[in-house]
Each structure stands twice: as structure tokens, then as C-alpha cells.
Length: 286
Ligand code: C2E
Ligand code: CA
Ligand code: CA
Image (cartoon, rainbow, N blue to C red; front, side, top):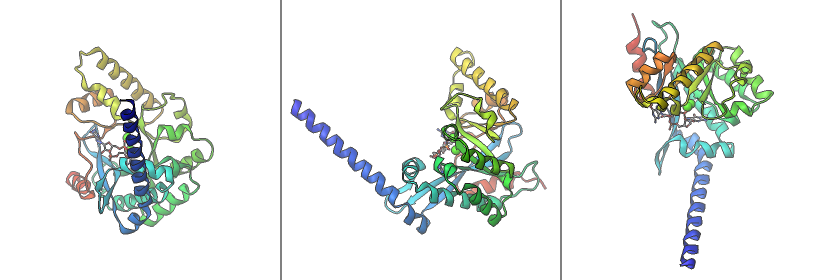
């Protein structure tokens, strides 16, 4: 029995190695895939909880792989970060999103819609970010306030000196900076004061806490925590977007708490750029 157990573990390890190899092969294929145009972006609406208008959209990368089919970012972003290939891939994402957003209709609404792009830690820490974003805005003609960069909390925490300066330069130029997945990592809020941030995106697990009935005590506690974080964010002049909003009930409670905007299946799934364009056109007032 012991021998058999040992053999099983060996098989398991071989399996794991195969998986690792497959992941690396996938990552190594990124440059050629970029050249062949296998990546594309889906857009998910960001909706105002005040008036229901679309304030912007988040760009989410996908890979149309010739053999493996449609790949979600979770399959390749992590490894692209490890290998550094996120830098060219992320550069392509930024450029494509900016090109797309430049063509969105801006008339008949209080604020022109912005496109929100995820930045990997490596991109924030790399030397060329300011130049890259500046060139991009110049080339596409997209006004800086119509671009938002999403950075995760952990990326910001490990950030000292140069990356913060880079983000401040971009923020001073009018680019919006959001903390993505807020509430999943460090819960020290003092650092927000020193960072050039304009928005907090509350992670879906916060919102999931609102699922319970209003009389459920643990759900009430979640709601109180959320409400105080929202007022803190507002005191720091930050806007708040809630992610992962799946039901009308969640949206209503988030609105009551004071969240500014929401993103999630209740308002719209990620889809091709034409879907956002339709939404924006439909809203347009004469
Ligand atoms: P994220 O930035 O937190 O993006 C939101 C994810 O939640 C998306 O998954 C979206 O499809 C999903 N989502 C949206 N609404 C709902 C909802 O109501 N319920 C649930 N359960 N999920 C919802 P997706 O597109 O698979 O992206 C996964 C992650 O991949 C993103 O998480 C982001 O961290 C990363 N990612 C995507 N595109 C890029 C990119 O261009 N660059 C980098 N560095 N990372 C990216
Ligand atoms: Ca994001
Ligand atoms: Ca997020």
C-alpha cells in the first residue's frame, strides 16, 4: 500500500510539472500571438448609481488562441507578469483601449466616458510608464481624464519613490488612478492620503457580504463596514465603485450606502466594444 501511495504522488508531481511546462509554453507564445493579433479586449460598463448612466468601461483582455480557444486573463496574466511579457502585452492593451475609447460619443452627458485599464505591478515599476502614457494620449488624441489606470492595492503598498512619482505625474496631467480590488489586501488606509489616487474599486467579496437578508446580523455588520469605508473614501475626495454587483438588491443597498458607481453582471457583462458603443449611443441626448 505504501509503494502504491508513493507511485501516486510521483504521478501527481509529473502532472504538476506538465502543467507548469504548459503554462510556460503559453507565456512564451505571447510575443507571436501579439504579432498575429490574437488578443482582443472586452469592455464592461461602469454605471452611475445616482442616475444609471454609463460613466465608463473597464477593458478586459482575452486571448483567441488558435488551438486552445478563448482564454480568460486568469490563464495567462499571472505568468506574463512573472516572465515580464506583461510589459509588451500591457502596452498593447493600453494602446488598443485608448484608440477604442477615443471614438466613444461624448455629447449629451455631464462627463465624457472614460476607459479603465488594468496595470500590472511590472508596468508601474518599469521606467517607461509616463512616457508611454503621454505618447499614447498624444497619438490617439484621447484626453487624459478619459483614461483611468487600475492598480492593485498590493502594487501600491510595495511602491516607494519612483513609481509613486510616475503615478503622480500622470495624475497631475489629469489621468485617473484607481485602486483595484480594494479591501482584499492591506487594510491600512493612511497610505491613501499620500498616493495620487482618485478612485477606490471595492472588491466583489465586499459586495457579496450584502447578499444576506437585511435582518441577518453579519450582513448588517458588512454593510456598516462598507458604509464607513465609503464615507472615509469620500472624506479623502475619492470616488467609490463597487465590483461584482450581481443583483438589483445589492445595487440598491450600495446606492443607499453612498457608492458612486457599480460594475457587475447586474449592469452588464464584459462584451465586445460595439456593446459599449451601443449603450453610450442609446443614452445620448439630442
Ligand atoms: P478584475 O480587474 O477584478 O476584473 C473584474 C473581473 O470580474 C473580470 O474577470 C470580470 O469579467 C469579472 N466580473 C465582472 N462582473 C462580475 C460579476 O458580477 N460577478 C462575478 N463573479 N464576476 C464579475 P476577467 O475578465 O476574467 O478578468 C480577471 C482578472 O484578470 C481581472 O480582474 C484583472 O485582474 C486581470 N486582467 C484582465 N485584463 C487585464 C489586463 O489587460 N492587464 C492586466 N494586468 N490584468 C488584466
Ligand atoms: Ca480591474
Ligand atoms: Ca477588480
